[in-house]
Length: 284
Ligand code: NDP
Image (cartoon, rainbow, N blue to C red; front, top):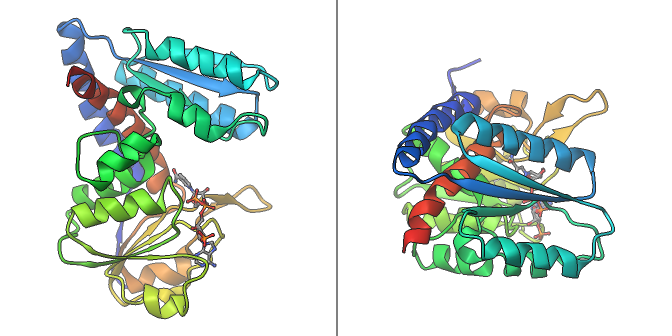
C-alpha cells in the first residue's frame, strides 16, 4: 500500500482530554466546579452506551455529571419542566438530552427549551445561528471534532476544496460553516446531487456523513485527498465500519480516518471541551 497517514482519533482525543483535565483542575483551584446534567429517556441500549461513555469521560476529566434517567413514557411537559429547572440552577453548566427521544416528545421543543448558554450539544437554533455568523457559542461536537483532527494533524484547510457529503443539522450543515470559517471552498452534496462521483473527486478534503456502509469507494477520490469518515455501522458479525470503504479508498489518500478510532472518539472529547467552554460562555 502506498503511504498514507492514519488520522488517529483515539490518540488525538486522549491528548485533548488530558489538556482539558488540566484546565478543569485549574478551574477547581479557582472554586469553579463544572457540572454537566445528562438526561436519558427510556433505556435504549445504544443510548445507554453513549450516555455511559459521556459520564466516563466526565469522570476522567474531573467534570461532575448528574444523571436524570426518565421512564420511556415520561410526558413532554415533565421533561421540559426538568430542563427549565436545570436552566435556572447556577450549579449546572451544561445540559445534554440524549437523542433520539420517544415519538410522543418533540425533539425540537426539547432542544429549544435548553438555555443556549448551557447547550453543550450545540443543537439550539441560537447556537447554530451564532456559528453561521461567526459569533461565540457552542458548536455541534462531531464537526467541531473534525476541525480539531485536521488542525492537530497539520492538514491545511485554507484555500482547499472541501466536499461534504450529507447535509444533516448535526453534522453536514455545521461542518460546512466550520470549513468556511477556516477559509476552505466548500461544496455540500446530498441525495439529490447529480454526478456525486465527479463532485467528490474535486475534493482536497472529502468529509462523508451519509449513513450508508462503505458507500464511498476509490471511484469518488482524487489521488492524495484527505478523507474523513463520519459514518458508524455494525455488520452482521458486529464488526464496525464507516460510510467509506476503507481498504479500497485508503491507498488513494494522503490521510484518512479509520472506523472505529477516527471521528467517533473526538465527538465525546469535544462535548467535554464544550463543557469547559461553558464557563467562559456563561461569564459573558
Ligand atoms: P442523516 O441521516 O441525518 O443524514 C444523511 C445525509 O446524507 C442526508 O443529508 C442525505 O441527503 C445524505 N445522503 C444519503 N444518501 C445519500 C447518497 N446516496 N448520496 C448523497 N447523499 C446522501 O445522518 P447523520 O448526519 O446524522 O449521520 C451520518 C452518519 O454519521 C451515520 O452513519 C451516523 O451514525 C454517523 N454519525 C457519527 C457520529 C460520530 O460521532 N462519529 C455522530 C453523528 C453521526 P438528503 O438530505 O438529501 O436526504
